[in-house]
Amino acid sequence: MEIIIRENDSLPIYEQIVREVKKAIIKKEIMPGDMMPSIRALARELEISVITTKRAYEELEKEQLIYSVAGKGFYVKERNRELLKEDQIRQIEEKMMDAVEQAKEMGVSLRELKKMLEMFYVGGR
Image (cartoon, rainbow, N blue to C red):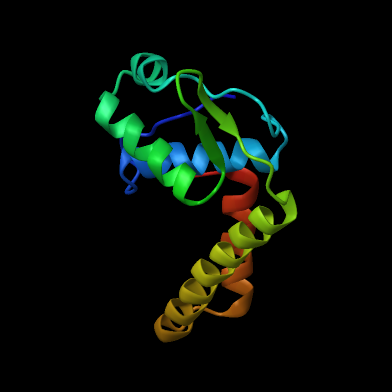
């Protein structure tokens, strides 16, 4: 699993870690029962604060994506991958609805909006 932190991302670093772990679960890069890097190891690898990494792991535990075993570490929890994917799709839909509303307010046509979406999907940011 590769966790990429972007300095220019509007999300806080701990939320970026959560997002990357979710992606890895959906893509089956990490599987239920797999051991997660220790908090200290991940902080060292990403060159971030241990506190930030701890907060990300706490959020992942709260969302029931990982669990801890005292003295052993953190593991990926058995969770319905489809539910996680559905949650991610719902979030995308909400962002798209916001973009469509904004486009309508600005007078952007559906054709122009489709072109923009295709450009971002194919070309990235």
